[in-house]
Image 1 (cartoon, rainbow, N blue to C red):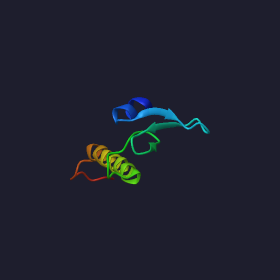
Image 2: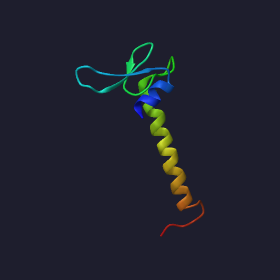
Image 3: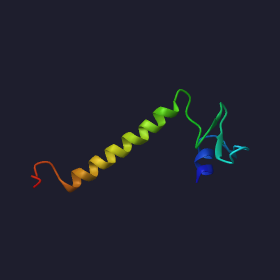
Image 4: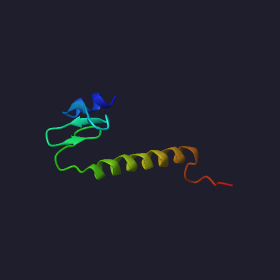
Length: 72
């Protein structure tokens, strides 16, 4: 799965020769999972995933308890 995401992002699949951990070998540098678009920072990638998770949770809670219902 890691390799597919890496290749789809423009990288080549590899590993760290010391730790044997997966690495995505990208044109600018190796990354843990996939190549990032130019100007994208690793932290913003993780923040986007966290934001999407929070939105997903909000949607689930909204479905269970629509606005206007009183929780008791």
